[in-house]
Amino acid sequence: GKDFFTAHCTAELIMGTPTKEAAERRERMMERLRDEIDEDTKKRQERAKEILGKMPDIEEVTPQSALEQAVKEARSEVKRLRKLRASGKGLGEVSDEADLTYAFDDDDMNTSTADDDDELEARPKSGADKAREAADRAASGGRPRLPGDADVTRGEIDIEVKSTSKASSGPLTVEVSSNYNTEQSDPPMRKHCFQYTIRITNDSKTDTVQLLSRRFEIQTVGSSMKDVVQGEGVTGRQPILKPGEVFEYTSTAPLSVRPIGTTEIAARMRGEYRYITLQDGQDTATTEQVGNGGDAGAELAMFHFVFPEEQRVKPFKPSDDEDEEDDDDDEPPATPAPKSSASSAKTATPPPAPKSSASPASTLPGDSDMTSGDIAIAISDSSNTLTDGVRVQVTSTYRPERSDMGMQKHCFAYNIRITNESPSQAIQLVSRRFEIQTIGSTNKDVVQGPGVTGRQPILKPGESFEYTSTAPLSVRPMMEKTPVVARMAGEYNFVLLGEDGTTPLSSTPLQAKLGMFHFILPAMEGV
Image 1 (cartoon, rainbow, N blue to C red):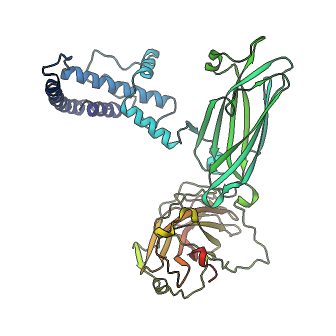
Image 2 (cartoon, rainbow, N blue to C red):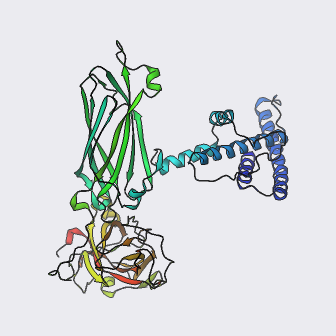
Image 3 (cartoon, rainbow, N blue to C red):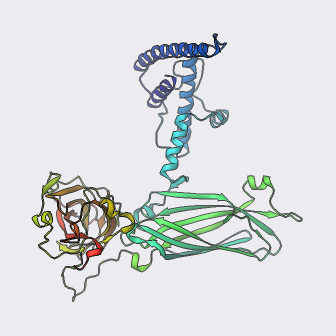
């Protein structure tokens, strides 16, 4: 009861509830809390008497004291939220006009002092505090996060892209070089691994330094936040560098990221190494020096993890001798609810949601050849279709490591690439609609929604948008007839944009067709 009342108090303090309404609500909550406290106290005493054989001597908890404690906790929570907001952290907002005096006029809670802040930091963490911290850790993989750089979020890098950097800070020079690790990467599954080599040189002619800790900020392209990686030591050590000595190490950065538009970077990174200068006769840093974080910092200057050429989304460059023939590779359909995430070349404020031409039904009558298993057309795990100057290409691959034939679970990855081949007209993708039919089924499932994997990317002439998604299918194959386990087709709706590149010329969308393709089991490919 008290925990509920504390939360209720906090909510009222945050929102600044009008006085009359707040007073009435407080009175109702007080009455309810008194009853709950009395009932809980009686139960505890009776239970204690059963165990001890007598009524124990316990401190009496009156309803008034419980209420005072609940209100005190609520006030502390409001102050904590204000403090977070002032420092740019936290998700909520606390009104500056919130009633912090609440029910007790003898406590002036409208002023905040350094002592108050210290008290807040020192107070025991409530269950809500712990839950909130756990949620924050889960959202960031357990790491602190900071607001990201806008150009990395947009995928439009406004500085020179370099995979190396070099910076000198005091006696230390920190150099870094990075490269793509093809062997440990899996692009269809958005797994891109990079290696980076750090070289730290002590340029001093007289001073010996010891590296104590490191702190890195890493932002993947498309993300609005930076992950902060920090800890004591460097690769588990705290190396000592005498004048002229060098410490060098290589580490890996496994990133889950997709290319955005024609941007070549996967991530941006910068950081700092904290160090101390050892005094004459001093062999290593003291506990106090380590605890204080060192004397100074050596900058790890900004550098980028750069996609290799084959992993980038390349701009379309039309040529006179290029024809418009479709690519007849086999194509993969998606499942009724494929999980996918994508990144866009550029995203502007989306236009009002246009009326889609997609059917409102969740299912449609299926193709008879898919129902029977006697496929009547050429099968392909890919397609390449040009509609109104927009080309949509798709390829699919089987993912055996995520499949279980014994359980009739078959997972495919499919890669979509949408290219604006118009010589002068910018477009914005606004919605999508897919039709998917598994083998043996009499119906097609219809998947539709606004945006493309949650975004509404803008494509200038020649630009492409690319993403990879997975299609986990639960289906019983007809191996005696066909290797096909599903068929997929659809369309992407887009609008033409005005000269400013952001304003739609019409609220009625055009359609770029996603040509039909199949999800094909590899064991029978070519049959």
